[in-house]
Length: 271
Image (tube, helix red, strand yellow):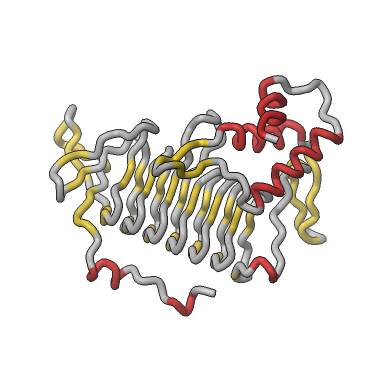
């Protein structure tokens, strides 16, 4: 499958055939089952699987615009290769009524809870025990670990192009506060706490007040938030004009028992 997709991506045909669409169907099925991932950890390092992103992009290329009759009075229009993901009771995913949706080709593990409205895009990976709260977005190819809490209004950015660019990665046991935004290949390591209102991008300086230094860029030309860091909104003076300030998230401390208690996810919310 990998070699076929790479070949089709680099040399797209003039006309898409039933064989091509059958390959894409098998590819999407593997994404839905979590058998392949757009990004995964190997020997402690997150690696982008470019060919998986290529496969997703092929779906956009070979698909034709069609109507999805969600209800009699509410149609939607998208490529016929990219329908809404369908769930069954056997999936053991708690999806509360109220307008949530997931695109076909994302993996959502058993034990995940999704509050309305929330959206999970193609290529995303959401592991077990995670809570996706109201108005949260998991972008295309974003990777979400086990027992993560995405609070209301949390935006986890994704990326399809360029195919080599790393998506946002949220590792296990992370708490992401409300109205936050994490974008552009940021890695949030295990047990980090992101306070409400924090926005982190690849161009946002992040200051570690415990170690008294700014975080350095990682191998993905973005930033890695170290394990157990507690990140709060902050600002710093603009060098060119000290009368103004720019955003600068601050690692105020590293997680302790008091922090664990403050962000503990009620067990009653889990399946």
